[in-house]
Each structure stands twice: as C-alpha cells, then as structure tokens.
Length: 453
Image 1 (cartoon, rainbow, N blue to C red):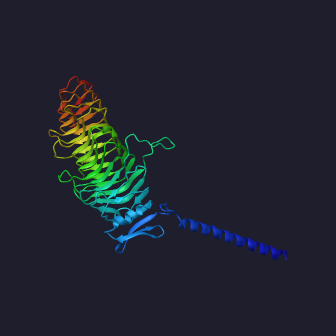
Image 2: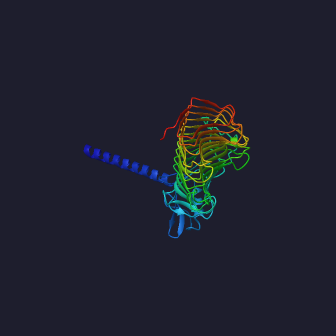
Image 3: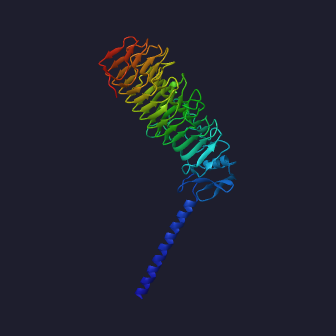
C-alpha cells in the first residue's frame, strides 16, 4: 500500500512539472508574437523583397506590411517598412521612383553587393531634419544614374545647441554609414551629401566614379560633399575612415562660406585611399580639418586648404598629370589669414617637373599664410618642392628637417614673405636649393648635397 501511494505521488509531481513547463513555453510564445511595432526580434524587424511582379514589405514573421508593383512602387513599399522603425533589410537592388525618407530610429541594410538602391531621383535616400532621430545605414549599394545625390544626411542642428546627457556629453552623435558601395554611373552627381548635421561616422565605404578625370574632362562626380545650407546651423565633429575613392572630380569637398567658417568644423579623414581623383581633398572656409595616414595617388591637386586650418600628416600624396598647376598640398589664404597649419611626415611626389608643378604651394595675393610648421617631409621631383608665392605677407613659416630629391627648386620664397625660417633640410639632386626673394628669411644649418638616388 505504501508503495502504491508513493507511485501515485510521483506521478502527480511529474504531471505538475510538465504542465508548468508547458505554461512557461506558451507564455514565451505569446510574448514573442505580440511584439510592439519597431522592436527587433531575431535577424530583422522588416524585410523588403520582390515576389514575382510585386514588391512587398513583410514583418519578420511573414505578415505583410505593404505591397505594390515591382519597380513602380518600390519607394512606397520601402517607406512603409522604414516607418516601422527597428531594422529593415533590402534584399534586392530596388529602383525607387521617388526619394526614400527616414522618419524613425532605424537600421537599414542590404545583403551585401547587388542589393540596395539605384535611381536617378535626388536624393535617393534622405535622413530627417530632426537631429534626435538616429540611423545606421550599412551593407548595401547606392547607385546614382544621373546628376543626382545618393544619400543626403541633414538636420536642423542649430549653432550653439547643446543637449547634455547624464554623462555631460553633447547628445548629437549616432549617424553611421558603413560598408556602403556608392557608384556614380553618370558623369555628374554627389554620392554622399552631408549638411547641417554633427557626429557622422563614415567607415569602410567605397565611392566610385565613372572614369579617370585626368583623361575625361567631363567627369564632375563628387564622393562626399559637406556644407552649410542656411545661416543658423553648424556641421562637423565627424570622421571618415577606411574608405576608397576612385575616378571622381572631388573625393572629399568641404564647401564652407567665408562668413561662417567656424560653423563648418572638425572633420577628420584617416586611413582612406584616393586614386585618380582630380581634386582629392578640397576644404574651403573650414575650421580644422585633419588628414592623416592617407594614400592619395594619380591626382592633379592632392590636398587643398583654402582659408582652412588643420593638419596634414603621415600620408603619401602623388601627382601624376599633364594638367597645369598641379600640387600635392596647397595652403591658400583669400579672406582670412591661414594660421598654424602643420604639414609633417608626408611623402609628397609630383612627377611633372615642368614650370608650375609643386610639392607644397603656399599661396595668397593679399591674405597671408602664417605660422605654419612644415617638417619631416620628403619632396620628390616637381618643378619646385615648396613654393611660397602670391605676394602676400606670408609670415613666420617654419620649414625644417625635410628632404628634397630631384627638384629643380627645393624652396622658393617670393617677394613679400617675411621671416621664413629654413633649417636642417637635406637637398639631393636639386638645381637651386633656396631662392630667397622674401624679407628676413632665416637660413641655418642646411645640408646641400648633390647625391643621385
């Protein structure tokens, strides 16, 4: 009898455990199937795909969000998916007929090469003006097919606005573009436009133009352009890294305004490769640009700082062109003095040794370049390694510890320049080491070696 009671007790216990486990499992299932809109569950929240002649957006569980005709309604269906927030996966190379707008915090991705967006509308994909909406765009293609913009990043970020979080940091970052392959199929257009927004990170992207602009003068495509669109916003505090630029008129173009230069500021370009870009990096009226650890080759004009402060360092910049007035680096003052630019530890090569081709050009007709530090660079070939020209009162520029190889003129100081400090430079196979037409040029301890390399 005791054994029978024990067996019955064990059976009841087992039944209660199974029932409890079943209830837990059902509770979990019910919870996962009642997720609110925009919450990521699994690999994605929404997915957009072609199904026969239709384009359709579905939830992760297969439930339809929106459906239309493939090719005709791509933009409508994709917008419907993005309006849900969360993560949206584009599984095809869609051809939207109108701009696709980001309206909520969202992660947009493709499935790698061959998936994404291709269109002639401008822009193809556009961020909101609300700086509080975050987005992450990655792992897809953006193809422009006309004189249009691929992705436009924008906001109404007002100069002086500060939104502090609990750590005391400004809460404006959170905009990421990564592993995106931008392609300009036409000769014009801007692949990535950034204006009035702060805290953008562009990483491991490619910006590919239609042809080599050194031999095709009709190429006017731009890789990245940043600017201010109105009189009260600011734009900057952003980084571009590990990207490839090829076959463009401009690789990176920062187009500021002379009256608001301090509000387009703090751009960092690090470890990028730029090949066959006519104007690789152009910065106009910008407060602080850092160019570091770059590979720039087959260019006409490498890095141009017009009324811009900053640093150019640890880079290879090679000019290979028959176009006139080529240079690896130019510092240029037009409306405000260019102060305290550092150019150091670079290899600056200009293969054209005819008149008007430079390693470094310091220029200004009335506005000077002052207090720049140019040191530990190698200047290879070119008509002139360093040219200080234009007639402005360029003041107190230091040129120290550089090496000049196979340059007709190593250093040329034009009239008007004052107190140029030149010391401890090595000259090899140069025709003229230093031409001094300036006032108060200081020359000390220069090596003058005629050694073939």
